[in-house]
Image 1 (cartoon, rainbow, N blue to C red):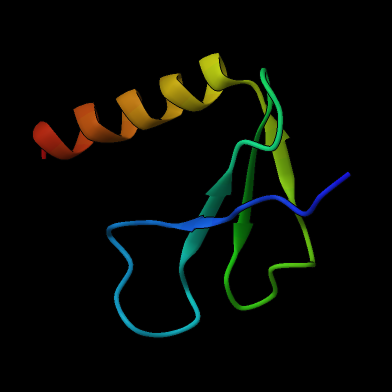
Image 2 (image 1 turned 30 degrees about the horizontal axis):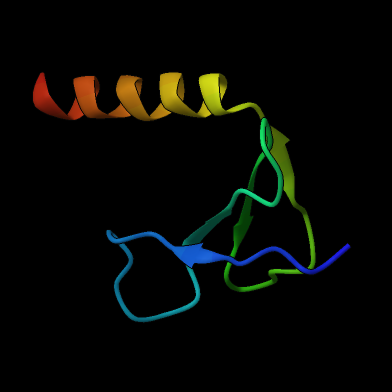
Length: 63
């Protein structure tokens, strides 16, 4: 299986504290941290990822 194509968060500044996301296959979303991209890789579903992003956006909008 080929390595996932990681995409860095658009909210990431310079440094090693960035979230990277990949979708290596349908129905799978993976997250890792740029300081150690081969370390812990969190796996979830697209629906759960969308719910998390939606919740974060809602909380930012409400301050």
